[in-house]
Length: 359
Image (cartoon, rainbow, N blue to C red; front, side, top):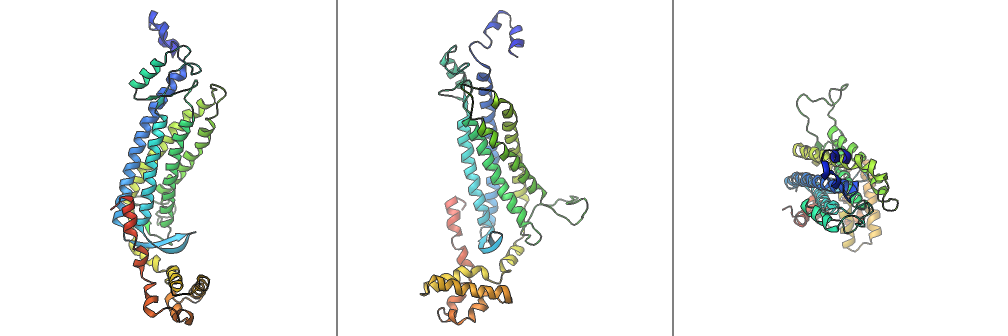
């Protein structure tokens, strides 16, 4: 390239590439590309955040069962679940903004970075014209911890997308079916089974996240460079930076569409919440017994014993407790009834939303 340009400039061609090295141009141009990519990704993240926030507000009080280890735990709301995602997305935005600042750096410092044949004022002038900061010090290249930070921010955001895509896939299981990816007229879920409605768009998000995460290793390995520079970073950066940006951009835009069209099956959420025969209120009963003077160990054993009756005999948890003299000797009927008040578990949802600025 330098030779071709030089040959077409006549006598002035001798000043082309004067005192600079190829990576003065390469790294400075790369900084602009990463900065502009970061701007697009921040826009994508904020758009997805708005859609998730809207869904959170709409279902702020929609009750459902919370699950730990895949097993029913205690009541939450679907809005709460979306609020957790919203919080993560806001952190993704801040990480991306921080990474943008880190990579928005150019250099015109020559073959080893010591300005042996170029004046530092040229670097300051060029970077200023391009809207870049100049690297306070560089070798032949801008140090690659900056690029690793950028790709790490992308990979973390992609992993957050995967987290909630996986959650939506799980909630679409036939046995759960609390949400469903929009299924358009004429769409087919399976070439063999006409009844299928698969969450394939969410599955695509998960697959792409794996690809993006895989690029973190070479990005971190590129931090190491022999002396003032070797060429090991060059070949893989041609792949990992552009691919990571493109993949995350696609993931975020796809998720925004999916969230905006997501079908929320509130009746199934309520049915699943009630499926365990009130066992999900066991901690509330345990704490009520403790407040009335029972040791925590004794209260735990009593609750577990009665929970076992529900599992083994199919009775409701409340019925089991009402027939247990160890419980009725401590808790009055109205106190026990209050333990099964769903609103008790949801009473602080407003506080959580206020903390997030979602009200």
